[in-house]
Image: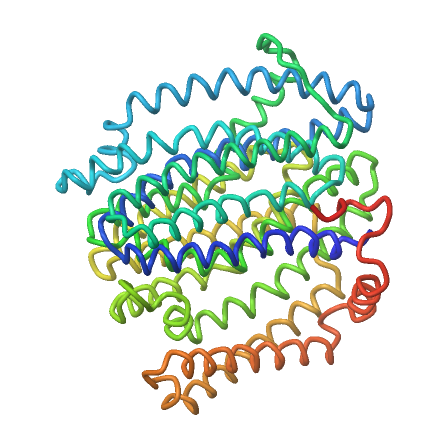
Length: 533
């Protein structure tokens, strides 16, 4: 099964989650607007989400997958099961202690870490404390989900783990629809959303337990023991805590600073949701597939295959993120208005959100390419080098945020995150080049240049069409404005793909093969993507 086909399988599942995420955000914008309850919900959700991505999806998976793959390849299913049980017992014990401590200390954490700027608004502060306590057990569920996802990914079963995040958006959409139908006040709606987050974590865990059981893999609970393999996992996890979660650390730092400006947290989250569509779909697909595939190639000593994997991943990531970034920078206002401007979300909120979106989008290629280059270190069990680069990136983000916030307000947070992402990427890529662990092939270098040219041409076309259709886009009719925006996006996409296909910036034979395979047989026997759920 081709690497791009695996990316497409994971990407399609993630795309469903992101699209439903837009529906969720649009409902939040229409129901609550950019107000105090929205600020409290996003601030509260950021904290368990930060731990989830740092501890579970970030540090844990980057350390767990190579070690689990090693046990699976060397000792077979039984050795992998024993390792999994040892890790599971320690993980559950650590999560119970962490969750209990955090829930007890939540008022202190909100006042010092989560949103210190809320201290001047007692109602918002108290609501944030309650919401965070309700949602924090979500971390426990999602850490279990991360481990089970790592098991499935190591077995080259990618689809289900990529699909279950859809459940979060489904539950929250149902909550918001019920709130709208029942005419609930903002505070009660926020509390329902918090309980919805917790419920979605339980549902995701249930689905993953079933998915692992279906593959014939089961684990039993035992007393936690720090075996040599578990100690090795913890040693690898320590530096990966910063490496895998640098974006989340940057966002938390930004939230702390932004809490000093009314509605800034809401504006940044609405902008980041749009930015997360290409970042999530492409970045998650690359991150989920590349690490286990690269680990297998290096374990077997097949360095040619490892280089091939990285070249194709670079082309795939840049070929989709660069045009997406230029498109978001070229027309952020119309996109934000199309998605959010209704109900409580005003035209002023659209303008402020669009400014943040353009700043976030400038770093989009860097965010995704970090997912391409980081696995080259993780698969070699080198966690320390990316850790030091992450520390530098976080320091730059903090300094830039503090320096620019008095001038640009909430937009400074997005700009600082972008600058730190590009710095992190340059350090990762430069080190791989100097170590001769990865240098793009001549074919890949040529394709990257052509992708950049096609993306620039697409950006010029989008800008020109906006100027031409300006009177239509200012029409008070929402449907007319929607049609104009969609027409511009479609024209830009057609122009971009026409150029990259004509110039050979994408592998035409592989593209034709994927299309033919989908027409004739959507899922082949023995491939990494399971039957449709």
